[in-house]
Image (tube, rainbow, N blue to C red; front, side, top):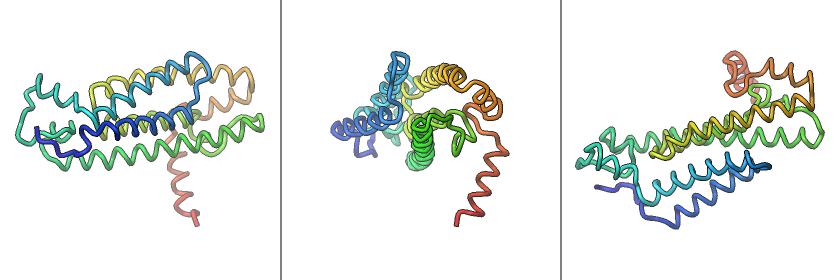
Length: 217
């Protein structure tokens, strides 16, 4: 196997990447009960498996070589390059994956800040990102994990764990909404009726982008 990725076998970098990614997750998704800890644990497993293969040992590629006959002269440690047969696939996947991850991180941080401000006031968060979706932080998490674990560096564990992570956090979001309905009553019921949970309406998103382009100065 030709290894074009110099970081393979760099376990110090693996540990550093896992620590940084884990800090971000627990910083903005601090678990408060056993259900949240269970969801965070699955994300932790996702992070460990992803960076262990990205910088440590490319298990998914070795298994693909063994079971799917991918042992070619142009094989690399990145699955996209190995499947498609050209090295540039890894670069394209990396750029697109990082772009998605950046969008997701912006959603996570922006949603957390808005939620934090409203919690201090004891009010319902309905402004900024919350005008478009009810759970911008969870949407951001899904985008980050998809960008890094599917687009940038797909592995058997990262691809298979993503649906479970989405399932657990969607279920967690529903339980949070039940609590918010008890706290804010009709106000939250009307908000829930007008604003989608995870996928923003196209017309609202289009108008927001146009307003930002026209009036950003």
